[in-house]
Image 1 (tube, helix red, strand yellow):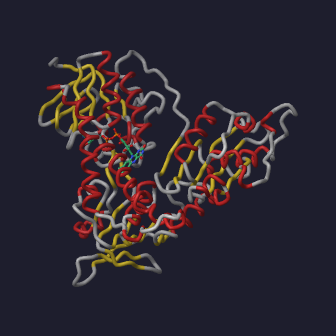
Image 2: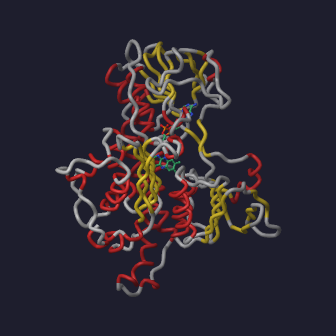
Length: 473
Ligand SMILES: Cc1cc2nc3c(=O)[nH]c(=O)nc-3n(C[C@H](O)[C@H](O)[C@H](O)COP(=O)(O)OP(=O)(O)OC[C@H]3O[C@@H](n4cnc5c(N)ncnc54)[C@H](O)[C@@H]3O)c2cc1C
């Protein structure tokens, strides 16, 4: 290998692999360094095993609707948790294997070990020093576990360890109700575990619209206990193997606790201080989100490691940007995508655009649909949740949406497309809506928004009004 590399990529997760793809197109003089297991967090312990568990939980939960459909015998169905977890790991191994094909093919250009920066263009791995014209840092993130809870290590789980369990205990607490906490609390509960969930804030799953937030909480509370607004603490149960989770007014004795308190960038051991740039209170350097460059240094920080969005498609974008900019003279500026995040609860939770709070609720118009009465949702016994769309007064330009609704992951993509293309409410209402589909609910919300705007022209189908007949909307 050459002595000075064109590019060194630190971290072989989604961001690192996206960077690798771009770097390889432009130079063969690179190395990829990864600490710990190869195969990406997404495939090993993140997006994919969590969604595999959720699918099993939802399949079992569906039996609750059978009687109403006229299907008998649901009460005799049981769930075999060890078998559920084995399937999660089997599919997980497949997902991991597909990512390993890329890195295995690199031969000696793929190095296992923990990289540490020694300054701009210098780093050390396994007591070896390397020099690089450009460095891409894509070291990912780790689950937050408060130091004070270390004595309970035996009873604590994170998503790093959950999918490795042979089985699960009858009573579990989930502490932290962001996207991951919500997904896991609901799926564990749907697998028959007695779940009690705790969130320190009053909003869950990253929602900012109070009406959607309240709806989501109410729906989840029909399935398991949810305590919000106070920090939970742990104490040992004397003479037993479990742990007691306490908040001010309530407590729960459980066998184990899944911690979902969010994730923190893997930067503490990296030596970022050797780069000579000012670090913020979290130890993070200034990163341009359009170039991924740290200041004007030939160093790039991509993916979860920069603490920005902690989402897979954003990590992939950032790796792509960093990979291109680390192999060209002068950084290219990239426009970032319309914000989109999805929580795989049921009903699904999704946010599109900049979020309700950041727009200020007095300066936007909102249209809403309540899926309790939506005909297709009723036919499928999925008539729960609401969807709210925000528009600009006057122009009717779509700004964003938040929802806890059936088919949220699909509605959110449709709305992200509309926001990205700067479509107006009337533009959307000019599009075809088939019957009977869940998207007719989305049209109801659009029509509610349109009613607050100047009317469109007489010959314009955007003005086609509802029939006010439930079965036809
Ligand atoms: C349970 C769970 C569910 C999720 N679900 C979703 C979802 O549904 N949708 C979604 O968009 N996102 C989801 N995410 C988030 C998504 O998985 C991450 O945003 C994404 O995987 C981040 O990729 P990355 O490349 O930044 O980091 P990683 O994939 O974590 O890669 C970083 C790599 O760098 C290595 N490393 C760290 N330090 C060093 C060092 N000093 N030297 C060398 N190597 C180092 C790490 O060991 C790791 O291999 C989920 C995450 C979790 C945990």
